[in-house]
Length: 360
Ligand SMILES: Nc1ncnc2c1ncn2[C@@H]1O[C@H](COP(=O)(O)OP(=O)(O)OP(=O)(O)O)[C@@H](O)[C@H]1O
Image (cartoon, rainbow, N blue to C red; front, side, top):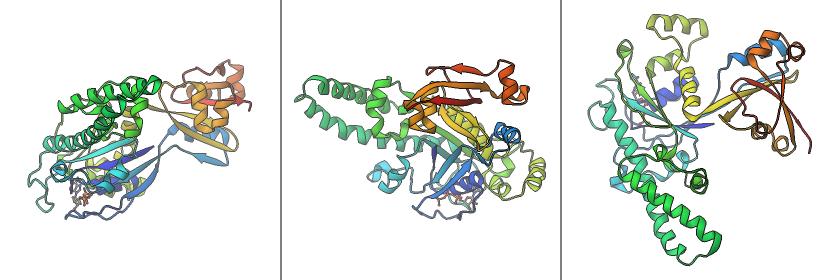
């Protein structure tokens, strides 16, 4: 899973990137204008994996991972100057979700592009830029489609008409300030439009970046939209915390009244917002977590491991994590009757331990 970190200049993107990835990328009070992104992989914390590792003592332990990409190059008035930077667009259109850093911290030493701190205003202005960018793409596509569709016949015409109608609907929504992630699309429409990678269609986690003084009474930002979540964190403190060994970090957190490092909270919020869950595989060679969309069937889940497993799927042997722990090991769980055989369409649950039987 790839998450792109965006936000206005000096909102604290690189600081938050460092907090999430335990990196030490350079941060600067004067916006760097740097466009080469900072990229890092982060292991998704999962206590169930550690428990399984104790049981199986595998040669290898592989958590799921998330890639964070910190891309600068966004301004609050790009639409007035020819649109978003193409290099920025190139990086950001490929991510699965956006993490939008909104500045709430006050510091006269760190200039704000609008000369004042106002998180709600900045949140809306970045949203607007994403929507303008999508509208420009839709306008270009519509003007071509309208000409082409009149010359088409049969199935082609049908598909293009569906695209045209869907794009017109999305455009009307965008004109009324509704981002694409908050608009309805049928499964078929979503499939036809997937290639456009609309920015306002991506799930978005809003990170309100506060300072240490605001930790006790953080500002409240209302932002209630589908496929959107909001997390408040003190970026600078969390970036320092991320550099400490566990024991020192705990003392530091106790002092500040932080119960869980932001990097864990952010990953959890991202999973929930995107409708993602993890299933696990366990054996003597490897214990591993796999990320899937909630609601998919066993065969499709098997396909995340290898396409052969999906193609030749016979059935899945499934046990819930808690049942396996209660039994003590797989043999005991089988005896207790908690290991089930499930077919292709069984909806895989978070924490299921799966073994797939297949034949190709
Ligand atoms: N929560 C915070 N509290 C106080 N200061 C902060 C906080 N977050 C970031 N800063 C400070 O704000 C400045 C800008 O931070 P940073 O370089 O991370 O922003 P950026 O959004 O990545 O900037 P750029 O526009 O260059 O991409 C730095 O001096 C950083 O230390």
